[in-house]
Length: 455
Image (cartoon, rainbow, N blue to C red; front, top):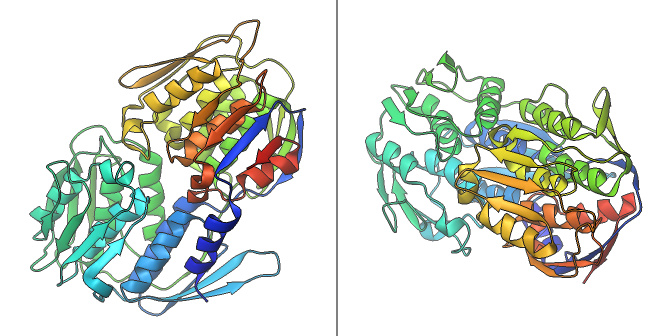
């Protein structure tokens, strides 16, 4: 069974293009959020690179994971999908052992999935034949830079071609005489570059020594990459956290069984919704100890949302006015838009700093976010690497406008959350792209009591 075909049907036939959000009564209920996209992508790649069969329990169902399923199949993996009675799924993946097959037409369409592109660029440096990476999203993924990663792969012996010095798609890559050694690379634009090199490193005869020469953005996702590699049987030596890693060569990925936990950035969208609309909600399947997840919970607690945990379940209660915050957004980078949305309803100013790389996501998540929220009546000031949010005042946030989500799932989540407490309904267009990470987002909010018209 092809999970890719199943998800394509969900994306194109059942998700709306436009939603209208009305001010809603306090939210209540229990939601199981999607499985973690970040864990799913990495476990699929580890299974793809192992010989034999790995099993992945309850993978995320999203456009991004579909892109990787399709690519792994084209590159030689055999993937079987088992549907469970509770609508969750189990994947059995017979991997390649790192021996790649040339895909049909020597081309891979990576959709709008930036993480998938970067991770596959690293692995496809093993290919003796040229592989071309393309995207139909020229104004989104098509404008995102990859030059630092391409330069590193070139130093290792890969032949790479891109459309510009910034390393934008389409990109051609061929391994040829690829080798290991020492690489110095910037982590300022994306930690995905380093994750890509870490996945490649154990398959190189000489291994790889990676030195990060400057600030590392989204460090928690690099922690996750290393955790996944170690579960797959790979040794990664941390000489200096977020600065210096050594991966011995001639290692082999091992087939394993993996269980995917719940997704904290998706849970953050629900937390923003209850923070704004008030009420009490319970969110299940959130594994404690997740670095990114604990930072998200800390931010919403600081804003005044009362959060309690019992095992893998949290309960979030919001009954009092929210407080403004000053927070390092790099700790919760994918959740910055929904945190900013909640901050629009605080009784004091907020500032989210250290977020310059938000400009390099599916949209410009600094300027595009600020522009659209200000249209709704919020008071948001963007800068080069920060976002400032000021209280709306006694009249509240007026709404009554249409907001463009810029084909960005995180902006969709933020704008819908804001709509739950505006004076007049807001309309959000381009919302089909919620399928990138959280296809059930609107249904889950409606189940909690939100008033959302799907158009």
